[in-house]
Length: 445
Image (cartoon, rainbow, N blue to C red; front, side, top):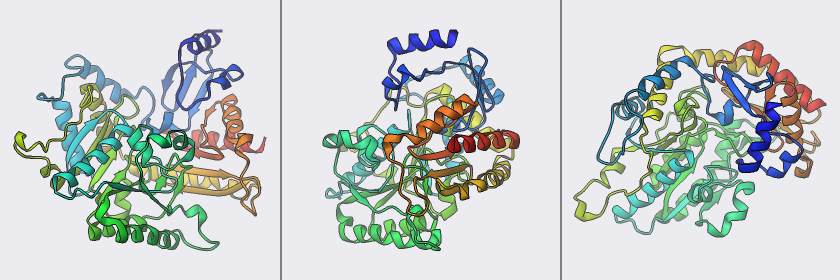
């Protein structure tokens, strides 16, 4: 009864993200009372395994005791302070740790509130860098087909998922969009590395012809998450780093979704052995507790803004909650878990189990591909396995999977016709088995 009451109260006053609210006339919202580990519980005792880490943010489970304790301690000392002209210990310590663990050369941290804001910061900072450096013709950004970088206007402009972008196109800056290294489209028998290398020629041609007007290339390393969990080989990032150096263009790595161990290494860029000029982080940064993002950049970029005030070169970008003490403390507790526990090794074991459990989907008549990077597995549903004809979007096959899985106690939230698994790192092998079993039932029912 309380579920229903809360749902009705909600619908009277709230508007939820990424939702056609009309759907909730027939499909009730689920009010959540509590969370523990990978489980969420509603007010009627129903439990749901959080197979997507609550939109990819929750790394170490709901109400994690280590993060809880850190926040309680911080709350008794300082909740927030203006970050212009003031600082605090949690923000300093977090920046020190991030500089130490991120790819070499990233030496400064600029805090923001969320992933989209981090992308906005990186775009503005790259553009402003070139202005301060006298390269005033550099005003363009290069992005990949099917990419996603957020939903504020700048971030939306450098993305390429039509569902999010089309309506707002008249409001957005022009960008250069090149073909993606997305290995879903490789030839039969072609390796990921060969296809990704072949696709890089499109981007290199753009840089060769237009580098004098390009500020930066922005990419999601290894996995285009909101674009359907499409994946590509690390060789593409190596080629991109070399090309950006050759043509004097910045490389922005958006690791908002793939950072902090999700692809098998702490940061996806590590698998290519590269360092970007800007690294955007958020989501798992605070373990799923509080909004926080950070952009890391090189000393060269920082130096381009560092001068007498009269030169008017400062980066005048701010958020009211920049460097929030509680969020920084949650992030520190999250990083401390990585330091004190064998997280990456345990993730490798879990990832191997996910590989094993996903194998039976390969021969399903309505599965085109099963792909994986570390703790991300994606299953591409298709109407015709041999022609790769997709289901019409109007059929909303993903919604059917979502509803069925919820009825059986698993929170899956497909991306169109792509079913994916991105669970918290504290999940057990038994819970993984349950999760994949319900997904199998959902696509065969």
